Length: 69
Image (cartoon, rainbow, N blue to C red; front, side, top):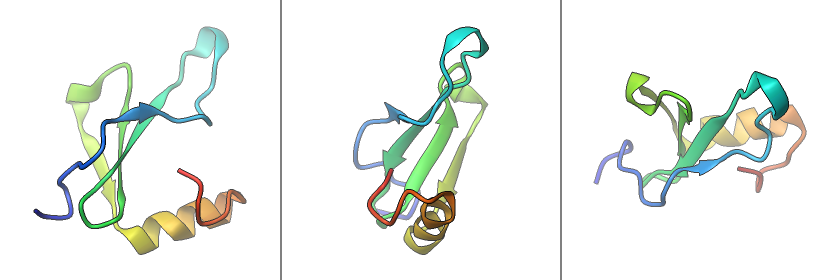
């Protein structure tokens, strides 16, 4: 498996906006311990992949701590 192999199903992020904006992202775990992120309205458009350290840094910068996401 490579770093882009999704090992858990995509799920809608709890931080996605609600209401009329309908701005939702989906997040999935990857084989390398990182995350894959895509637009829930248009998943065929592409997926962004983040390594484990990059994801930890991103979540920590948001204030969610290392376990979020």
